[in-house]
Amino acid sequence: MASRDEVMAALARVAGPDGKTPLPDSGAVSGLTLRDGKVFLAIVVDPDRAKAMEPMRAAAEAAIKAVPGVAGAVVTLTAEAARAVAGGAQGHGHAHTAQTPRAGRAAQPIPGVKHIIAVASGKGGVGKSTVACNLAVGLAKLGLRIGVLDADLFGPSMPRLFGLSAKPDVAADGQKLVPLEAYGVKVMSIGFLIDEGAPVVWRGPMVMSALTQLLREVAWGDLDVLVVDMPPGTGDTQLTMAQNVPLSGAVIVSTPQDLALIDARRGIAMFKQVQVPLIGIVENMSYFLCPHCGGRTDVFSHAGAKREAETLGVPFLGEVPLDIAIRANSDDGRPVVACLADSAHAGAFVEIARRVAETLETGAPGAKPAPRIRFV
Ligand code: ADP
Image (cartoon, rainbow, N blue to C red):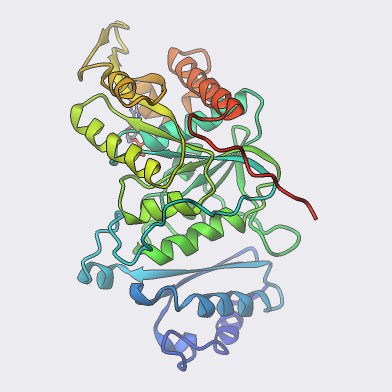
């Protein structure tokens, strides 16, 4: 098994961000973790130079992989929290360094993965991740082969929602990470790779670099659908991601309040801008189900999302009640679709999953025919 010192010695042969000082002396190495022969390393760089730093990142990864006893290595570029804040970054999607999206998309498909769909919301806290998780488990229940990519680098929630905390293994070829698995779903999240509480602030190009690794350097195997939990919001970063991931379509999660709907509208506009078809809208926290009497209360103006979907000509996929059982079980890593399989909530999610699966089969409105994958 490789030691920390051996890894550092290997990194000494790689020049740090200034192009000459060896990495271990550059002060840029942070968050070196070794576990079972797997090495996870973050290198702190100036966010504005992240793109230029990609060869350094790749060289560091290659150097670590060459150390005897190292089964695999993942090196990511990060911006130090303090520095990024000083630079004015909010962390959430307003990275001015993100590439300006072009019209049209040229994202490469992932061999073996039939469909990739995004679950997105115009703002945080509307239950996007909860819906993404239960939708994925619901799709798996329908007999489909499902993966979940937690692309919410700013606040990964899939480890918690699926009750997963192990570090992923490295595949036999030493190249790819093996996704973790729960409730019949393969899951990959930056949360598995970076210690919780690590002060990581992602900026535009780093987001793309990390996302590309999570997307393409993972042994997904054959999947019918890969569900991508997008970061909340509609900033440049999200737009760039929506453009760079080869999406079959997007599911927008909204609560019924007017405010959330304004945000949802922004989300819809964002996907339209990058020509990603909209599979539909899910109204979460649609109404309140009392756990004591079973009575129903429309806390917000119920069915706002449904009305909005009709106005916008976007399919309405279904509504999920606000219920303590959903919150409590989700926070314990027990998706209600799997753990309260007979409940009305589980039924609602499975119905939403069925609609999504049907849409993928027949093609989302505005979808182009799926690209043919040529095997050589
Ligand atoms: P987002 O991904 O939009 O930020 P989350 O999925 O993390 O939102 O949900 C935010 C909080 O709301 C979590 O504590 C979650 O358990 C809770 N929550 C989500 N949907 C529901 C629901 N339908 N009923 C009750 N609590 C919910």
